[in-house]
Amino acid sequence: MPVCALPDGAVLTYADDGAGAPILLVHGWAAHGGFFRDLHARLACTHRVLTPTLRGHLGSDLGSAALTVETLAADIAHFAAALDLRGITGLGWSMGAMALWAATPLLGARLDKLIVEDMAPRLVNGPDWRLGLAGGYGAADVAASVREIKANWSAYVSRFAPRMFAPGHDALIDWTAAEMSKANPAAMAALWASMAEQDFRAALTHIEQEMLVIHGAESQIYPDGATRFVADAAPNAERVVIPSAGHVPHLEAPDAFFHHVEAFVRTTRRPELKSGGVLS
Image (cartoon, rainbow, N blue to C red; front, side, top):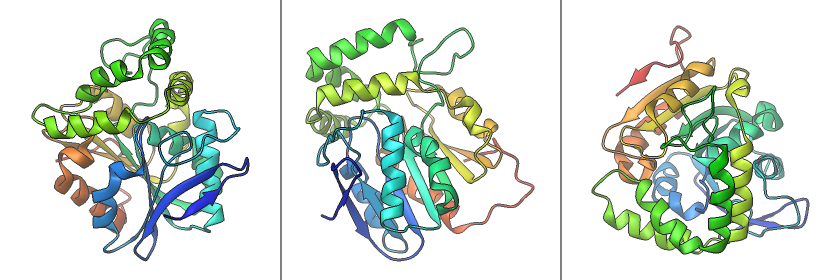
């Protein structure tokens, strides 16, 4: 597997297959590039596909830089520059979407399109934001989460992994829990704390790239309104909802997810298409 050296000396591993305009797949929190294995292979039949494992996650180094969303964004920009990637379609799942939003101004003209997989612009709910993590997760809950992640990672994963999927995906839950359990708890705690500090509501209004927002209709992580907000806020966004999928539609409904991604990558949007349009 190829590697990319980051400015602080950390090494980022990645998969790179296919040819053509690049699609960059950016995984979520506590995951790794292997979560995109099947999608990577399908897309690589007709595109160049690059799937890095972000720093602090299984297979890539921690490095000396702070483990924050901003650092992940800088790593993505460095990776794109090191490989001289242009005309990128960036697909971010969950935390990966936050990292790509933060990386957008750093990538500049290298970034052509964005795909957001089930992510809100803000995790933490509050008086002015009720579309964060399900269950009313608020600022007072963050410290408790960080403590538990550090103290009993396996217990945290055992509760979190089932919520990622719609009912009926027991095999995926078991696999995901096993893979997440391999993550570094201290690194995950730092990244969780950083995610909880993020608020991309205003930044979304300045992202000019075409954006496809994909929501799992049965997501137990984010409410429908969260991804609807993203699609409404970004000036050139559209939204699709995948039935019978939760927070990980690329694994739960791989054919439908692939269809939407492939169509978006290949199609130039009509100027009259308003943001927030829901396709099914």
